[in-house]
Length: 372
Image (cartoon, rainbow, N blue to C red; front, side, top):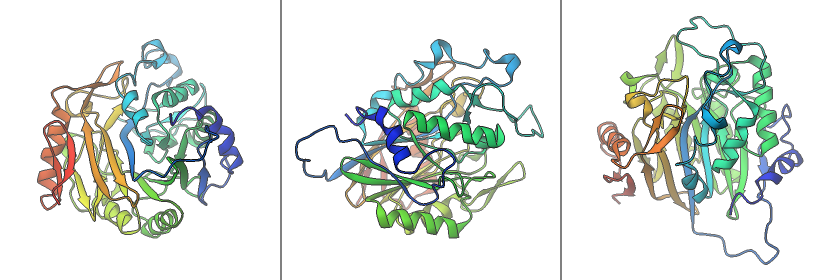
């Protein structure tokens, strides 16, 4: 039901001052369209949130290989297993690993083209997010700069046109508030790249998260941080660096977000999963890894683990329950249901190792509960 009015959201976003290039550093509110003329029912006591990691559905870069790195059938099947889960929740969030842009543009300088790719997704692929039921994407990843200024501006414009909310560009779109199930859901996104809100700039973290907490019922924070690869599945509880870049102290950052009013915090960036914890009765997922990267990115082994986490919170944002929906990526197909629950088992082991004092319980099928 939540997506009956998605086609109208682009116009609502514009009315709320969210046009690409407009100053969205102040909180922008995108209301859910009223589809019922009768009196509104009582507000629900429980709100459901879906969380996923990196999405890069295919790239047309370089021009000479434009058709090589695209999934079959225009990508229409890449969210086939995930869409029913996204649509079942009040709000669904993920990370955009790249830009939406027509062929062309100025690519960022690459110090090592063998290890850094340019991700230029076809503009029409933005519609796949809507079809899947995704409401919000972070645009604070390092790949937001792949096509420099033109890529960032094109991405915001295209997301506006299909009605998918976003945040993460410093001074332009720092946060957004969505109205869902009669509640205001405030969302912010942080990263480590140029032009994004940095997760180590704690004055900005405090300002943005506290501001959202003052106007929203539920606050969600997304972050792109941590070192990359299978050697970095554990949370180190210190500042991380990778290829000479500051990737933040993700535990310090995430807990600060909760201290400032965040109710759910989810991370991505390492291209592998990390553990989860309950901190002050709020859920923190430290990395959800790659989610839908069916071409170009490596998805073998742990890099193919693609959890979709759902969490239920009460009206104050306190954790009630949830589930790690285990998925594993298949080349060209995206995330596919893993009936063996291997992804949940891996994340449970990481959670026990890194957060032994956490009250979060993870069952064999990925069900999340609190020991309290």
